[in-house]
Length: 137
Image 1 (cartoon, one colour):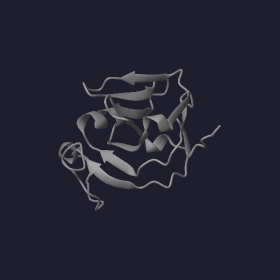
Image 2 (cartoon, rainbow, N blue to C red; image 1 turned 60 degrees about the vertical axis):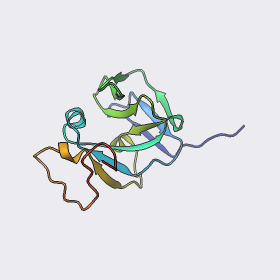
Image 3 (cartoon, one colour; image 1 turned 30 degrees about the vertical axis):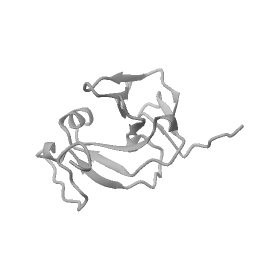
Image 4 (cartoon, rainbow, N blue to C red; image 1 turned 120 degrees about the vertical axis):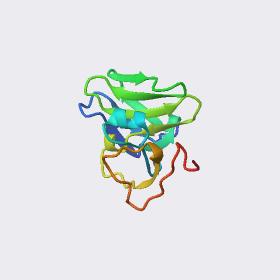
């Protein structure tokens, strides 16, 4: 039997939700949409893995909120940590890189939904900045 080894472990702030990533995640995408800003208090950053590569070890406080008709967000209902984002019809899941135990070796690669960015920060880090929710938009 093949035993997959985990690449990264992660958890919410109170450690009630714990998980492992069984593959190396993508570099980070920062989303500036209004919903991500409201959920996080700033902008939300995410790395991605295939849904099958996310193993949730402890989920008694994991809750899911349908943030739109096409997606839902996973968070700890004890400490409030924003952990996951998943589109209903996608085979990948977004994971908050801040929830990963470090070091991660990840880097921010791009910004999306820049047209909705807050007026209390500047996007001047030299990375690509896309107006919509995809790197093509």
